[in-house]
Image (cartoon, rainbow, N blue to C red; front, side, top):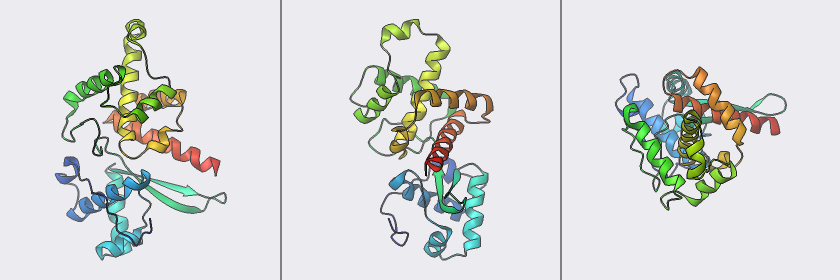
Length: 227
């Protein structure tokens, strides 16, 4: 996609953004534009100049908006460098785990922490039962990662191990439906478990947002090292 071409994808502005008292109206609009552009590759690569031209504002203004969104942890910035450490691309990732696209298992953006466990349980049951409500592509990713267990095996697994499995699967499902399919084709089982443990130890606030960002960052580092 050329930056000059405006995205034809729908913008998504969840309740956390719409009703935020910390964000300016223009920053909320910018967030929506970033979600629309994220649909293409799983991240937004548009430059500040693109946004400045789009909204008829200065580069400095766009920089302030993006910095504020990052400071409030609504987005994550990743700088991709070449072998000479020169920045060749900026990637903007959406942090909101409720940013789910259409035609997926219905996870309401207004769901609060007190019922997120029910969502995870329902999703896990669908996956274990190989329900047709779950994408075959996503199911095959779980098979590759060896995250599909029979009920007999689950019956003898430790409770904390099952909870870890459920939370990892839920996070992967959020990533899958947020445009990170290519990422999930490359992640490894043990790496996901290691990042899960790290996230449990270091996360402040929403564990799932932190875990999701950790996976994205690790993937970006891996891509950079391979270039």
